Length: 117
Image (cartoon, rainbow, N blue to C red; front, side):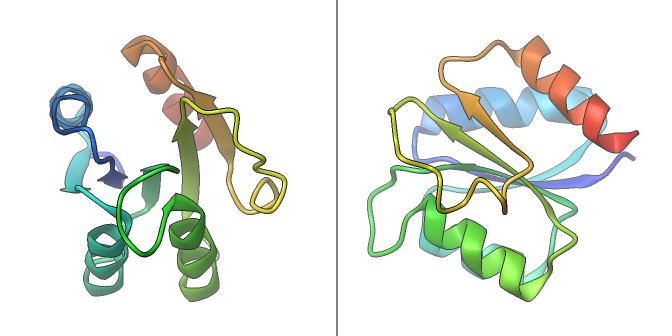
């Protein structure tokens, strides 16, 4: 098995497609449908890599997830995915990479492979 991944994405179909793809690439993948559940999942079972959306329903968002995970476990590799033109300057130094939606699964694979080297 490769590294473990926590995928935090509120779009059910997108979350399932990415999860299945990553599992075919031999990653161990846990998912969460919002930022709060993602953070709870990470705190109970930390992943090597977190891939998180930014804009999600709930009281906290993806930016909060990035900040809290980095405070809890700074070595975690975090990839932020967003379709919006968010001002991400507040977390750019915490995230390994911002990935603009829509993206191709092969692009995600390539990004993850480069981070594992």
